[in-house]
Length: 362
Image 1 (cartoon, one colour):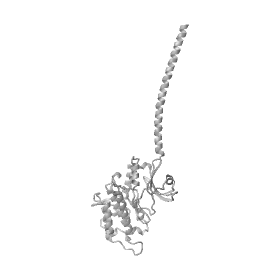
Image 2 (image 1 turned 180 degrees about the horizontal axis):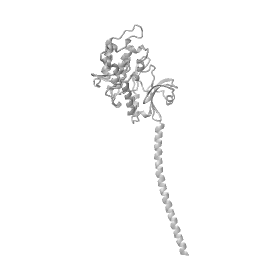
Image 3 (image 1 turned 90 degrees about the vertical axis):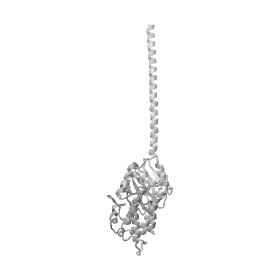
Image 4 (image 1 turned 135 degrees about the vertical axis):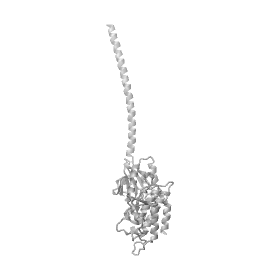
């Protein structure tokens, strides 16, 4: 009987020991698993926090002239759409607090670059100031990577609208044509030579030249392609090509150069002189000149006097206007052709363009 009790006691103690050991092993396993999962949760949470910070972060960089800007003013401003492109929308907006009209350019998040040096690029563009360049007043970054550029608003619209304005005789006045041409060249000179390294515009065209009440020109969108990703930048280039402003050697936006900007400048000069839209679907090279089709006939035999409207004048709006000399028009035309040379090496640089314009003024 005692042996039976002893046997039962041994079996009981053995079983109890086994269950204690088993429970201890289960406890250890669960603790390790819990610790491992806890570590994963912390890592995941930290990642989410970082992602949330990126998603929720808003920032407004303010430059000279934009000291009165606030995020609320910009986002709450009633706006009128005045232009659209594949990469963004242009608004005319009234800022309520300051009661100022501003130009807001919204860039679609899918089209903008997320390069590490984006802030450096924005700061670089924001510091550029010149009487013939549209200044950047503020740069807003939104919660989902959207970007908004704030500029002054110019009430006379853009150069393309001015050139083709019905019934506007001022677009035929030589004094205004010359003033606009010289101002554009001065603004481009600032971009090409005013920094340690040239700033390439990359999308120079009459729609990107804004005019104030006295027809002073302001080049807009300077360096805008630097804020776009390669796909959006290439779409910008293709649009420029369809509109007749792209230099023949330019294939990729990343290869834009001072020489390709000069080509676009030459097209604008021809556009100002002829009053015609430079659509160039099938350009044809002629000797050293790669001419937009809208000027080809003139080069092949028409008289220079056929290039400009009889109303291109020197006067000041009175009935006693005096026509500009044909020699001035010819020199201006020759300069535009030189800018549109087929070979980039033959095109004048921007300082040479300015010297030639000064010779035209005589």
